[in-house]
Amino acid sequence: MTDVTTSSKPAAVASVRAPEHGIPFGEAVRVWAKIACLSFGGPAGQIALMHRILVDEKRWIGEERFLHALNYCMLLPGPEAQQLATYIGWLLHRTKGGLVAGALFVLPGLLAIMALSWVYVAFGNVGIVAGLFFGLKAAVLAIVLEAVHRIGKRAIRNRTMLAIAASAFAAIFLLDVPFPAIILVAGIVGFLGARAGLPAFSGGGGHGPSKGAVLADADSALGEGVPDHARPNVGWALRISAVFLTLWLVPVALLVLALGSGNVFADIAVFFSQMAVVTFGGAYAVLAYVAQQAVDHYGWLSPGEMLNGLGLAETTPGPLIMVTQFVGFLAAFRDPGSMNPYVAGTLGGLLTTWVTFTPCFLWIFLGAPFIERLRGNRALSGALAAITAAVVGVILNLAVWFGLHVLFRQVDDRSSGPISLDVPVLSTVDVPAFILAVAAAVALFRFRIGVVPTLLGCATAGALWQLVQGLV
Image 1 (cartoon, helix red, strand yellow):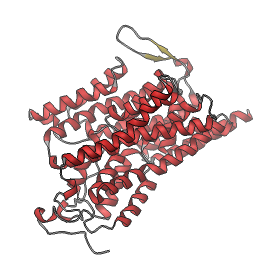
Image 2 (cartoon, rainbow, N blue to C red):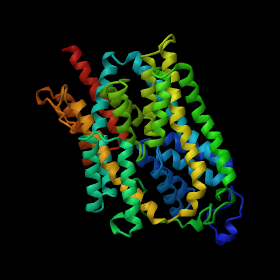
Image 3 (tube, rainbow, N blue to C red):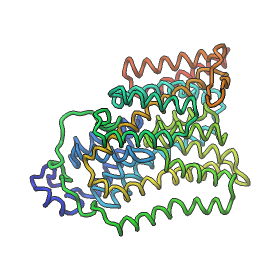
Image 4 (cartoon, rainbow, N blue to C red):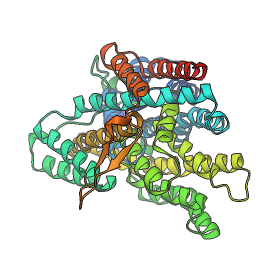
């Protein structure tokens, strides 16, 4: 391969270069496959991995452009890491590059979660398997708390952001305000605050890579200009919208018309399509919304099983939002109609993944050409900052919700008027779960052990505890 790591061409010249910019498509496919197989640890770890490989090692894209793409993806509903891969793949190799990068990012997790879903429904109640999932649940509670801390350190930079985070927590925890409404209000507040020039709303979001040596856009393979295919084109926007809206919504409409409202497949298609539109703020915020609806509204699975699914998603490559495939699998497995439950579960999981990720390609291919013209826009950065602060409060709500259902065997509803409040029955504390959760928190916060080793350690401890109980 020829050396393409530096460029002294001015922007006007760089803007008319071929979209490949000297990067062979085959090599890009191999790099995206590598990223997909190594993308453990949630969105922060996945974004850091992409930054290390694409910016630091390959030098295909510069720091400023990487962060601009990340900021746009964080403003979108859905998994920002997968969308970032799609965005950069599109910048480098047009639509085919975006399709390959985004699809490869999902594929390993899809296969792993599907296999583990089969194991769960087949052997989940067998002693040692039940112990493994018991340990995973306790570890996940600590992982979500660590996510609150990690994102909060970046997002809560002043009292205004702290107030937004606290308001978001109170709104969703005490008042059951819908998650999309919280994010919408936060985005509007941030947008208007930045437009007004208020310093509290300056800056970006909470998942960005650590600042180190910076690769200038002009010194990257992509360069600092705008490739021809990345320029806004109304005709292209209409065509790509028609294609992906058809791929996304036609199956949903057919299922609803053929099976009717109340059928599990129709409900899966409609609910996760809605989720794809309204779930702003990253994977953990999405999970708060999914848990609220899938557990409390639809009754597809229990709070403990939601934690099991998150544990599986944390220990497999790919987006954390792949936990939704586990939710869809269980929903269809338990309401298969005339189908074999395993076939129904598999179809339910695949349907969930399809309607969750197909819109992600639409958001990138439709919006990215216009966003490329808005690099450095203060109003967008302000909206992002406020949304990320609100997400901290939403994720804290998720941690509290998980804690109530992991650490206690009984939770009482103390709701009154508009206030919705769940209070744990202290006498029902699950001591082994409490010990494992504390151990996981110490591993993550004190010794900075990685997410995957922490999960594996807690799962092993849970299995050993189950064996001891069996012997006793």
